[in-house]
Image (cartoon, rainbow, N blue to C red; front, top):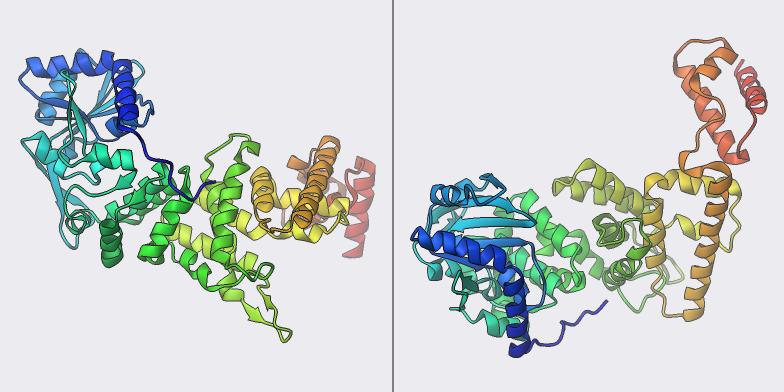
Length: 483
């Protein structure tokens, strides 16, 4: 995965790309533009769709801005759109669907944050230029008027797009004061587009990082997810760390820069972690759903966060991080709860962090079948992701060692596959169910049934499948031993 930004874009390439995209979406933009124009309103395609059109990226989600008020927009869409919704009415936005197109139309607006408020106050504007001036970055402050298709670029967004740099339309300090989340968006867009960031923007982010604390955890979380799932997450994460934003929204990440990896003492755990993230991304095609996969990527990012708290210096000069997997899982769970992640996502990432070292006990294949069964049972529905995170965690430059680790994990996966074929490992359960246990022991529901069930499950792990008769004998032997 590249850490550097992609090469600059030529003006000619940008012009060809945007012309091709506007022709593709002409059935929507021309028809809608005529409809608004006949009613005496301005309409312009704006923001991401214009930017991405110049980059040769196609969109079926189209954003427009207009002089019309929301109720006028809604009236104009009736009879044209297949469906209309107004969840964003308070912010001047009316949405609709037209065939395969998703459309959002927002009244010209200006918005600002109260210094102590998490929510913007919205005032409608009266010009396209004023609307563009309140946008986050110049590459998002371009518009194409429709139906005439005139480009409006008052802040030099085309040049910045060609040079692949993020700048704000006005002073970055003013922009970030109005909406502090834009500092997170700078990192996110850098990660998504592979763009560099103007030094003035970086300086403002650094000076104003603490302002992010007025933003709700949910909005910060959403930006972080988009960043981690972007094509160049290392670029965005570095920006968060270098500006001090990460210390406020994901403090476990910059803390890693202070620690030394016990296997590679020439580089810190922070660099190792970014490399593991990129290697996990490269391995995402192995996952059933492919990528980008947030759970896998975030587990790779958090897998070593327990090291700062578990570092110990040994008399021979080495450094240990015993139990950093368990400590890291607890830290991960706490951070994800603070960022309002769902319980399912939190459980999945924490499990991967806790299990990421388990493979290293495999040695050169000494695990018994019982140990392999337990590996599968403990990973449960995260097994495929665990394969990816564990493989990605090998960052040694020693090619022989890397090849050996890869072959050893290949062997483990082959053993899992063989046992799965024989024993249905993904749904391991005892050879007797609760009803059979109660019938054999002559007892009713209660704690003893659960204890017997767990005993039989451990036997299943140790011995593999048993016949019903063998399981019955084992159960009776266990019961006799308990008196």
